[in-house]
Image 1 (cartoon, helix red, strand yellow):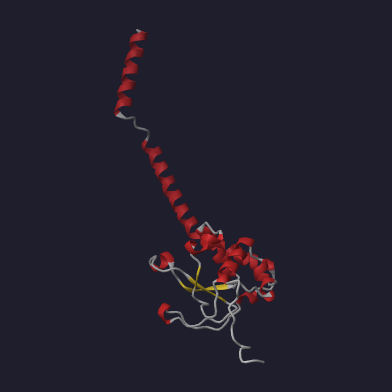
Image 2 (tube, rainbow, N blue to C red):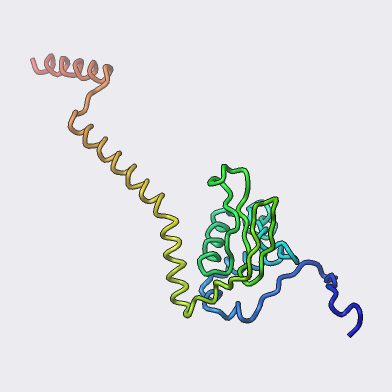
Amino acid sequence: MGKDAGRFEKDEMGAHARLYDCIVNSPAWLALPFSTRALYVQLRIKLKGSNNGNIDATAATLKHSGFRSSATIARALRELETVGLMAKTRQGGIAAGGKVCNLFRFTDKPCWEFPKLGLPACKATKDWRAWTSVREAKAAIAKAHLAAKRPAGENALKDQKLKQKASDSEAEEGFVDSKTEQDDGDKLRILKRRVAA
């Protein structure tokens, strides 16, 4: 072996994503819809030698890849986290005051420390190996989506109950005509009396 044998060579084709057979044939991967797999590949292209843990997935950075909807991205990220292919390293967005974005790591690779971002180093956890069947992984994904929708659903039910109470009280108070409608009704009654007489 020569002096340059262990040296990293830059790929002439540019950035690329390495997909391992043990991942793409795992129940975790097979449970994912194709759009989520596509997002994984786009994010994997961002993985360089030492930036695992500092991977962002914002709509602005992904729109050139065909991801136009932030809801689609959020759904796919939830699925990737649920099956353990990726893990959040920093909470961003509204929960962080809207000033920073979420950051992620791939669980099959180690994560280096990023002191400026407050991210600790960690070993590869390979959380995706926990799934023994596609059915089990799909059930976990469905449960995660349901949990994500629940708060909005609970608020919608509260709003619906408030509207229902308002309707009940309106029905109890009865219908009151406007001043113009009352005057028109009085004029109509007077005309009917004159015609009848």
